[in-house]
Image 1: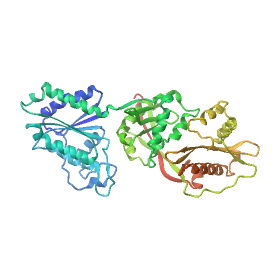
Image 2 (image 1 turned 30 degrees about the vertical axis):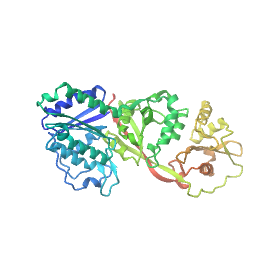
Image 3 (image 1 turned 120 degrees about the vertical axis):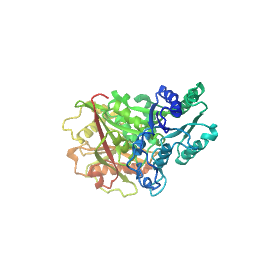
Image 4 (image 1 turned 180 degrees about the horizontal axis):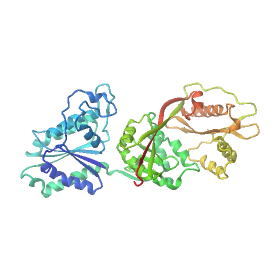
Length: 489
């Protein structure tokens, strides 16, 4: 857990600072990451009420650009819990703390032409206050203000810890004051107590991860294109790096998966995906990937990360974490509301499914279909047996076109997501000597018709011109980002 403490007092050795010492110590003893930001030494202009920030949908945005507020915003957005620590000045916070609160208005995109959104929807707020009156009378108004602010913003409010000044600094050095601060820290830690990270166990966790990816599928972001079907297909390919599968990370909340940091086939390239309610974990997932999934090359560490063009939160995270955009490729789908292309097979060619597979012929077809000139290695037959007997592989959806001599001329695998009503093509290959006969078009059309009959509404295809030529359309792009750093982590 990351906790940011905003210190609003101008007296950096005063009562409020003294009360924060045991509070922060308790957090750190429980492995929380604590950042302490003092406001007294910062240049913070007052909010102008100009609504400029409401025109920036995916970033903070403010017309006041010549002070320290943008830096403060960047730092506090890293936290899971934001603690406002302030003495009470006329039943409110200190002026600089109040200015920060007012300027944080730009985190809520509730007005103007922007969609309703909160840039800090992952956060919770809390309050530490010191005052010279009875606590309810002295600090109650500020406590209620934060409670209403959180309610308005849709954020959890974790409460207030306040101590009355009856003997100057000594009031905040009593056993009761110190113990109360520690207990308040413990109550805040409970927010993240149900979330834990651990290594992925391929044998025992595969099904749970597959279900998590299915249940959290988002038609807009596509989960960084970490689709459950591809996750399964990659796992059951003979070239999958199962030796290092333990380097993937899982995040669980009360025993349920809420996030994953994973690679595709081999380390060096990662996906990070979190449940909507736990996107604040994305930074931790990226850190995990950098530590566990990165590779060493040319004396440096490096990591590639795949996201989609529809994930501004991840784009922002990667940019701020030192990643550079490398390239993109289209994500294409065929909508089943469109008419299927009509094409006939050449004479002597036949369509079969995979229910009576000749795995040796299939291995030959896929191997040569992906442009290998030599004969396939003997283990490829076993590799195909493994792949096409994966838990969710449906051999009746596999579509193969046989040549007049009995060769497998073209073959494809098709996967169906019953919950999310889509089909996923992986793979599709035509042996070179049988190309330019329209076999792939016929095979793919046949397979799509099968999944439409099962209830699918669209099919994911590849990125090449072949797909757009037969009616596939681009809905977004996969983006590859890369970071390089020193040889040691």
